[in-house]
Image (cartoon, rainbow, N blue to C red; front, side):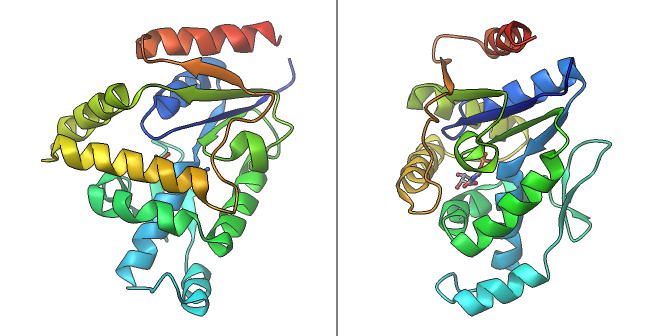
Length: 220
Ligand code: C5P
């Protein structure tokens, strides 16, 4: 059983990370949440008040940035600081897609992701994993669900974490991110030609995970 590389892409709040985390656990693989990396970059630039139109300033700020994952709980660390909770709020969510559209940011993240995943036995979720980061992945899944379902899920998640958020704001953020992510020039979100589409509008997350697991089993 050679260790596989599994790429999971799709729209915002579609169940990708739930699927990725559950599959990684079943297989004993590591899970790399690439969205968390772009969120951590965004927080870093926000804290330093970097003007996103100023390429030199963005490049400078990227020099003082180190993103790691804490092995014990997979929390994302920004220069050693646990920012897992802070990056999930709306302030970061509102700025992350413009930040992730910058080539200078993508280059650094993609390089780090390839490095982290080079030995296989890994599941990455994001927007460009099957198209750009690991175009030769053993299994590519593209996850989607209709917008209402995704808004409901994200709202439950955020409120479950004690955040006071309005449905309209969450819906607007998901729609706006999907639009920017799919229309940027560098590595736009799209389904890879050889990716398997999983629409989970009418599936529970458990069923989504079962389906993913069945697809992995088919490979072996
Ligand atoms: O996965 P998550 O919703 O946390 O990702 C946050 C944002 O990070 C996305 O809306 C997208 O702009 C960016 N992203 C990306 N490429 C990835 C993962 C995330 O551009 N591989």
